[in-house]
Length: 286
Image (cartoon, rainbow, N blue to C red; front, side, top):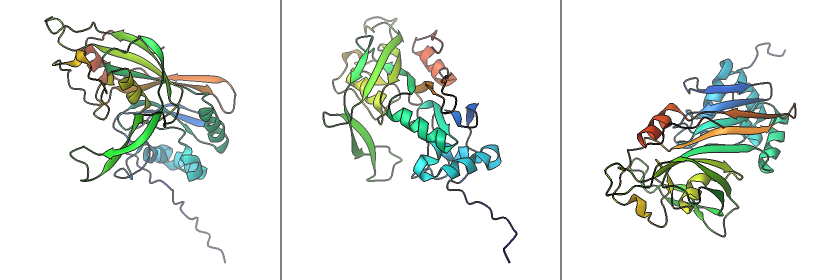
C-alpha cells in the first residue's frame, strides 16, 4: 500500500531567510534583484549558506526556491549572470525554463544592456571611448591577511591570448586635476564613469580601467601597470568597499518580446563617498 504522507522536497540549495534581498521586479518568468555589496552571488567555499542564491531559495516561504530548484543545476538554478561580491546592483534571475533559455541566448549573443557606475582614481583619457583589450584568467596568491595560508584567487590580465573583452565608457563627472602645491586640491583627480560592457568577463571593468591608467576606488586587486604621477603622495579618503555599481539592465522580455529596462541609482554609501571626493552633485540614472 503506497505511503499517503507527502514527502518534503529536499532543495538543491539551502534556503536562508536571513539573506536580505531587494526585489525590484517580479513576474511569472523572472526576478530583478538588487544585490548589496558584500554578498556573494552563489554558494561556494566559505559561503555555503549565505549567498544571494540561498536568499532567493527562501523567498515567499520557499515557493521561489521550488521554482529555481526545478530549473536544476544545468540552468544554474535561474542565475543568468553574476556580480562580484563587493559590487552592488541589478541581477536578473529566470523562474522558468523558457525564460532561462531565451535570456541565456540573449546574453550569449550580447543582446542584453548592462551598465555600471564606477568611481575611479584618475580620469580616463579620452573622456569617452571603447576599450578592446583581451583578458586572460590567471591564479595568483591570495594576499588577504585573513585568507588561508597558501591559498590563491582568480584575476585577469590583459593578454593577446585572452578572451575578447569590450567596454564602452564615458566620464560623467570629474574633479580638476590636482596640483600638490594647491591647498584647494587635497586629492588626486577622481571621476564618475559610466561603463557599458559588451562582454561579461571576470573583473572586466576593473581590469579595463587600469588599462587607461586609472583604477576603481576600493579595489585592492588591480593596480595601474604604469605609475600614475597624479597619485604621487596624494591620499584618498578610505573607500570602505569596491566603488562599482550595476545600475542598468535592459533586455527583451522572454514572453512578451517587449524591451524592458531597470535602473538602480548609486547607493547611499557610494553617494556619500563621492561627495567626500568632490564629485557631488551626481547625475540621476540615465
